[in-house]
Image (cartoon, rainbow, N blue to C red; front, side, top):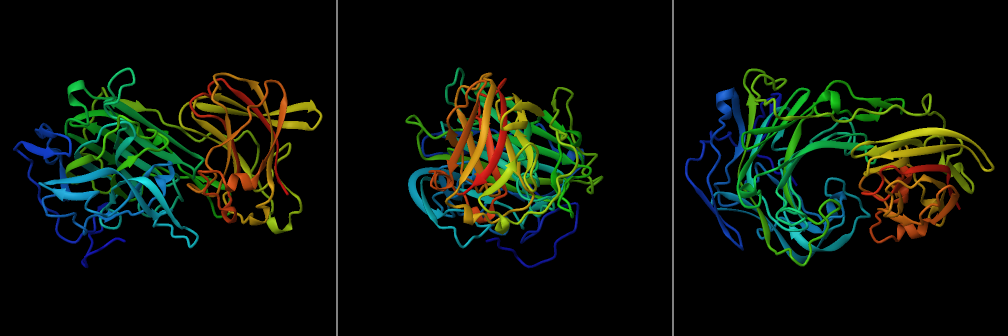
Length: 532
């Protein structure tokens, strides 16, 4: 739980509520030596950029000079839920995983079995139990003690290395009016995966990313990756990872190199309005609210994959300092103090796609009034299950195709111009479908073109991210022929990675070629329904 020290909180566009006055930090001028369980690294701080000279005022900082973590600024997360990414660590508040030593924060990932909460503590549920995972690590945040809207955030850090290691410096909304992840947005200041592993070349990339759009799986993400010089690998050398955030524009820096920019014309948020129809947020939404900072080291997960036999433990992320600045000339919108380089890449982003269907989906729906079938798509959308796609890059072209085949009138056709997308049916509301626990999810698929799809096909059912069945493999559809699927719901409930809660279903079907091999695939979908 968050711990606050009583006192007034200044109401600024960039606000921090802490237990003491913000320290006035001086720029380090000495060499800093840090030790890990494996090596000793000497690193000289980067001093070529001075934010104060650009009009930035320091409003919140932690130099990690004390004997332990300052709980007036930071809060521990303690759970084993896997971060919604099938990660393999439990986060703890133990000194073995999070400590302050010799002027640096240490977040240490260890290979050790640990049992903890099978869910996130922010969304307590009486049905959540305990689970055991094979690794431990640390994840801390400033939520409720450091929450900001616009400014410059700097974190000087050195990352861990090895297959399956995923350090992150990132931000989440503190009180989002736009809904759950990722409609409320996520700002990734710096992430890295699998540093110093060999995949054609030594991995030395850092990544800056925005997540936005609708609630999962209707979300998207866009960003930029930067390869550092071979002698500047983020696992060997401290770097200053910085973000400049102003109204309608966000810029990423490593040391004093501005390498990426995203602007509000390339992001959006989508959320249900008062009448239940989906609304696109105005202006710079969702990145127009207060966000807080998170620091963590994940182990495994969908992006890096699990550790392998070459991964050594313990591994640690070292953080020299965290500093947050406010633009003195225009704190309300953050403009006027930023730095910009013409060599930085402008990331185009994603704008919401128009539906292939005309008009707003309307109607009434009461699961208790259903008999033996719940239609989801039959020639057209069926209230309340609207159709959409999630795409991480590239796009999916959706069409409504009229056929004269027996049993198939209008069908959905999806053409994949990406390797990272899913097609799904979803409602803005959640429904209790526990009476269908012995039923089936049924649908018809036809593969028109295979494209690069060579890794199989998947389906799943979701109950508001991250609740769901996880990816459930299905038999590959046949080119040019309709194939009917009848998936037992008990099988989905017992799937090894499933957390499906039938009392909270909002997405009765997600279907897609397996990620990584989708481009050029053309898939038709019809006769989507639940039966019992």
